[in-house]
Every structure is written in C-alpha cells, then in structure tokens.
Image 1 (cartoon, rainbow, N blue to C red):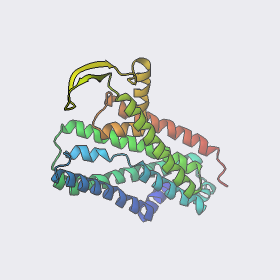
Image 2: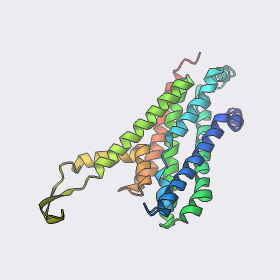
Image 3: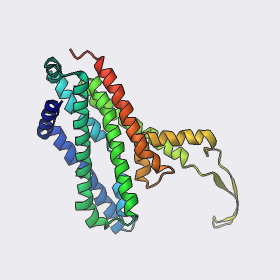
Length: 276
C-alpha cells in the first residue's frame, strides 16, 4: 500500500491535468473576485469577501475532470492491471487512488484559497462576519468536496474509458447542482405570500392581505427535503454559498457518511470488476 501511494503521489506531481486543474481553481476564484470588485466599484451590487468567497465553492466539474483523467490514464496504459499482477489487491488499488484524490482535492481547495488572499482581500477587504462561523463553513465545504471526490473516484474506477468517465462525471456534477438548487429553491418558499387588493394610480399598494403559499413545504415533506439537501454535497455547497442553512450542524456528519458509504460501494463494485 505504501508503494502504491508513493507511486501515485509521484505521478500526481508530474500530472499535467492536475496542474491545469490547480490553475483553473485559482483563476475561477480570481475571476469571481475581479467581477465582484467591478460591481462594487460601479455601485451595482455590494459584496463582502465571504459572500463572494463561498459563492463559487461548487467546482465539482474540476474535481471530476481530474479524477476521470488521472485514473483513466492508469486504465489506458494498463498500469492498474500491472499493479494487480504484482500482487496488490483491488481494495488497496482503490484506496490508494481515493487517498491521492483526497489530497488533490485539498490542494485544489488551497489553490482557490490562495486566490482569496491574493485577489479577494485586496479587492473586497477582509472577512466581516464571525470568524468561527467562517472557519466552520470552510471545514464543511472541504468535507463536502471530499464527498464529491469519493463519488467521482467511484465513477472513474468503474468506467475505465477516461473520456466517457469525464463526460459522465461532468453530467453527474451538473445533475447534483441542479437537484441541490431545486431542493434549496423549494425550501426557500415563504410560508405566506402578499396579495394586493387595491393599488393606487402610481402603482403603490393601498391594501395588502397575506395568504398561505401553496408552494410552501411543511411537515414530513419539508423534513425529507431538508435532509436531502443536507446530505447531498452540492446541496450543502449551495447553502454554504448563500451563507445560510437551517441545520449546518448536520453537514460534517452527512459528508463523512456519504464518503464512507460511497467508498464502501466503490470497493465492493471494483472488486467484482473485470479489469482485463
């Protein structure tokens, strides 16, 4: 296992895809801060550093492209088959890739964090919110990224064609974002809505009544939706990006459980996969 990790980390440092993804993570942050600063300077919108810093947390597409291409090369060149022939078990091979992908994900997060300090702070100033809360959100965002990495590692290990794995991973990342956004949108519906009865000639409401919102989720259905958003990695990221969330205490545990469950499924499935 130690030799597998050593070989994987050595290859990671030489991997062109990894360095391109690192640059993309940094540029994604830098571009977002530059645009936000332009809006603030022109008086269009007001941003604090944390609002912009967390608004681009979901970059699952970068993680899935890296995982698919990094692992796909091993299948393409027969390296995984050679490792199994050398006596390593499929579980060891899977876990070695997963751990390297976790480290790569951490480094991608650090590349983005570097853009916060080098570009974000000079443009938008320092964090204005509660620092303990901000640090907690950073930890939650990182754990959700690890969960995404576990999901995309499973996909790459089961789909040996790197291009197909990359395309499927990007589609899956988009689906996760869409589902997370839909859950967040449904949960954000207000319980009551305004109904304007009389409006004057200037278009100002003279009399307003409030009525129950038929789209408001309540009871068991709301609890199911909330749990689904808290468990889904991109659902967590959307809440973190909005600096909101009814149950942020659930996020770390949900991410750890998702990571462990997906890893268990991945090891089980890869153990039954014919890599020949």
